[in-house]
Image (cartoon, rainbow, N blue to C red; front, side, top):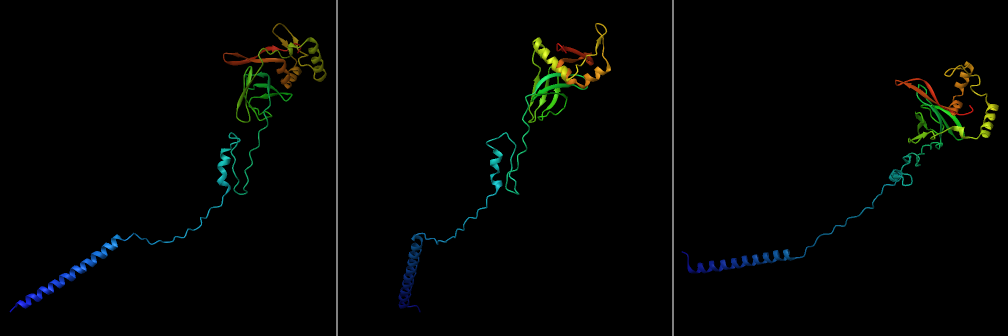
Length: 244
């Protein structure tokens, strides 16, 4: 039979257990609060910084300087030679352009000609010829020619307007020039005889001499092709130097 003594003992035991549970709960709460309220402490890890290894500079790193070429932006492109470390040699400069002067032309036909004077010399050139300064004769017209210079530019040479060659010289100067010419080269056309108003007799020898001295003829006369229905039929002499 359960007695009153047993009830008192059971109540005392429950109170003890409740007190212990409350004490344990208080200790746990205090520990949790202390953990949560403590300052953040991080464990520092020393990281060793290795020295940066830089790639040695090569000449290609400086290629942009040559590409921009501030001192000669229109000049040839330069490039370092990777094998020797030196700059590649620039292409040889073209010969300086000669100040050509147009003396005369024979345009039309299969073999148009032009007489040019430069550096104190006069010479006959054919269409497409490469001149001594690297220029090329690309067009021959009645009163002008067109040259393509060594650098690719094109220029036009024209006969002076109203050119009369040496016709404006005085009689005395013409006589001196004529005497010098006669001492050096026999006059061309000495054997030509006029048959009538429109016909002349030209010996074969004179024709050969004239053909071999086309430069002299171009300086003495201006010859143009005679066009008939768009075709060349002979030539027309527009101007003849007096005394020739």
